[in-house]
Length: 293
Image (cartoon, rainbow, N blue to C red; front, side, top):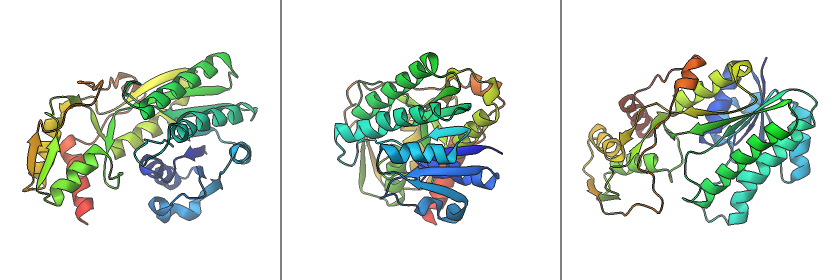
């Protein structure tokens, strides 16, 4: 039986992973803050061992008590709620380092599965801190205790029902469903790899199941493998919601250091036995239907 310790288990991705692994019969523990809202995992609340962590000692204690085979790190701070740079660093870098140190002290083989970012570090404090931790983790895996395997997941633009309202995909879908008067957008020619949450969960599950075939330090790209323009995504949402919202493409300038193409190379995942199962239209429709309900 897999013994999994999750961070971010009450967030969008973490809760989906927790729910999947609980239902698969795995032993699931989760680090949470004293202020964490567990509503997303309400249906499996009794099946998860929660560790409330308010300081460094709590993190070390949680890892020692759970003694996981896998640490799946999904916790992050986007900096969208007024967090300071120090707050962002604490979640995106420091917490991960504490977990790595804790794992090394277990005296057993542990696979550390990190949720990284594809964004250029110059885009934001979030991107810089996430890229920094991925680099730290890779270095520790190469120089540190060989019993800790570091797997960095380069995650593309994940979306699905129940995601944070501050995310671009959710904002577009909710705005079109609400028939807001107008939606101000960039020109939308930049291309993105949109990947549905169920496919992301199955990708993580595949990596854990095939961990023996993954090297001691490896980055694995997770996405649909296809890139579509942001304009195409928005227009598809607009069509599927039959929205009256006016789409004002070109009303918003691109952010500094905006990348014009993101597309995952999913060859490595395919070699482990994974394939995406949800088309963009299917994923958007599922999200719309659940938002309506």
